[in-house]
Length: 246
Image (cartoon, rainbow, N blue to C red; front, side, top):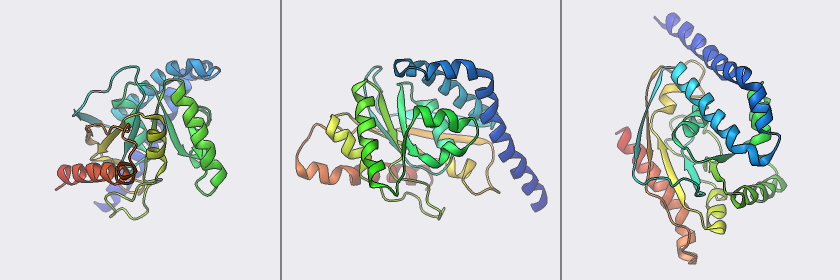
C-alpha cells in the first residue's frame, strides 16, 4: 500500500508540472505579446487566471469560496493570505478578478517557462538584500499608482516545519497598504497544505476552501493603529484557519 502511494504521489507531482507547462506553451505567443508593454498587463492577467484554473481543475481540486465583503472592480487592494503550497499562486489568481501583481521570491524564476513570465510580471525580492527590499517598495508603489492591486504572502515564505499553522508576518505588505491608503484584504486558504504541500510524497485531489474576509481600512494614521494592524490581520487569518480545521 505504501509503495502504491509513493507511485501515485510521484506521478501526481509530475502531472502538476506538466499542467503548469502545457497552457503556457499553447498561449505563449499571446502571453509574450501581453508583457511587451506595462499597459497590456490586464490582458496577461486574464490569461494567467485561465492558466491557474486549468491547473486547479486538472489536479482535481474543487474550489469553494466564501466572501464576507465584495471586492470592487477597478479599485486597488493589498491581498494577503497564508502560504503553505505552490498552489497558493493558482488559487489566488482563481478567486481574485481584479488585476494584481505578486510580490514573490526570486528563486521561482528558475522554474522553466513559468519563471520566464514570473520574472517579467511579478515584483521579485531577494530577502537577504536590504537594497532588494527597498526596490520592492518602489516597484509596488508604481504598480499601485497605475491602478493595480498587490498580493503578498506576509509570512515571507513557506515554513519548513509543516506543524506551524501560521508563521509570523513581515511588515512589508502593511507598510505599503498604509502608505497608499489601500484596504488590506485577508484571505484564508484552508486546505492547500493538505492538498499539495512542499513535501514531495504528499497531496491528493479534493476540496480547497477559501474565505475572503472583511477588509481592513488603512486610512487611520494613528500610531496605535499602525502598531496593531499586522497583528490584527494575522489574528483574523489564524482564527479562520482554526475554524476551518478544528
